[in-house]
Length: 428
Image (cartoon, rainbow, N blue to C red):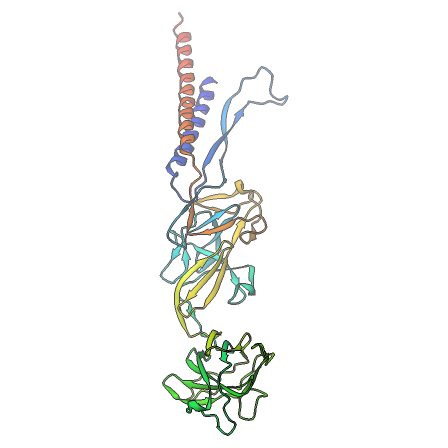
């Protein structure tokens, strides 16, 4: 009996040494969670239970439990590196095409594969929640996951339908007589002008020029003309809806130089592109001059914006602390690509160990709980950082000494029992 008891102790000590050695070996493994050997004593039982005088039959390994406490974050120069600060796991598919074979990890060393998918070193694809639109405000379909593909994205063009211009027209400008017919080619028929580039539905640029003509004290007529960059001298009048007979709109100012009309933005008629390119006509529904003034200073443009975009190429990827992935484009636009899908479990220690710093669902772990970073007990996401192993090397080296002593002590038990047996056998 003492031999088998000591042998069980040797096996337990050997297991403890193996677990400690594995912890030490993975001290620099991203997302690694240290383990500990958990033991239980063994007693030979009978129908009546364990007698008070029954010695123990040794020890057994009850569990090798992983410790899922937070590891330190180390910052990198790669914004595709991700770290979770708090609860949750990244959700991985076996590959971009095998999205139902799931695993879970805390290691966020992601990169782009040859097809532009975000994958880890083993080729497993990061899953994200599908965006409902192109902006964060459109929301995400939480629960509907998909791989995220990056480098195939292009910045789609957006047609201009809103222009905002804030100007100051010179109060000292002379009134142009009504007898002088407005002509964009005649600088004597207007006081000032400014231009802004607008875009059609295919992303092609078109120049919108606004002419300001003082028609009376505190009153200005505003004309809008479209032209093509290749032929800037060929201009097409774009009428103000509900405006004057000559297609212009009217701006009026009070005695303090503040704009009093229009109180709402002008709406312009559609501009049909010639020659036809397949793009839809440009229709500016909001030509807004709010904030414009008339004071005794030279004409100036204080602000000018329009909401159209040309086509663009991908220039970068940003990931915020809620896991929202943004694609940035050379046209100045951005697009939400997805939101990193996080998963947690009722019993983390029940997860099945799959290797490669990944875990799988098991009967002991409970059902996966899907969620978003920063909500419902899920941690935040740090881009450009990785979670280090939570192994404390000093503590593991101490445990190594303890496990070694445990092994030696059990070996001494066998040696002692052998000496006793030899003494008995040598009796004559």
